[in-house]
Figure (cartoon, one colour):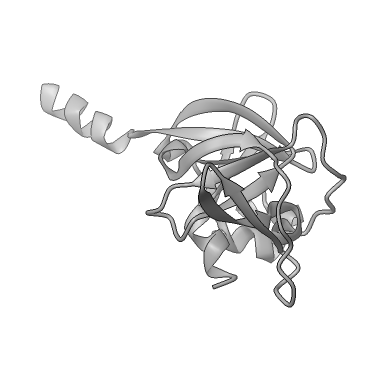
Length: 161
């Protein structure tokens, strides 16, 4: 019996996800991928690049590429508010970069089993998000009141480098 419990525990690995809102929808990334969350500061635009690249920002002497997650996901950016934040990803995800989000949420812990594959067709519940978003996801998870779309931050940067 104890052996079965260990197997169940291994198959039920928990993930901590940093959640945030974009255009009223709930997204999340593995907490280990996020270096920090900071208020959005002024960035320097970079000309002749993809529209999803907002520019560069200097935070405590470190230069970060600023990606507009709204544009990447196909949503309009309604403008900077007091809740707007900049998530900076760790270096193991990619070169120094981060994304602009509407509002940071909380850290949720869910089982990996609860993250459903979005590449499994219409059963995923992602039909309305489109193929562009689906290509950037690890899956979705149903929380109490809403769906959580789990993004793969490594794929965010790969689209622009």
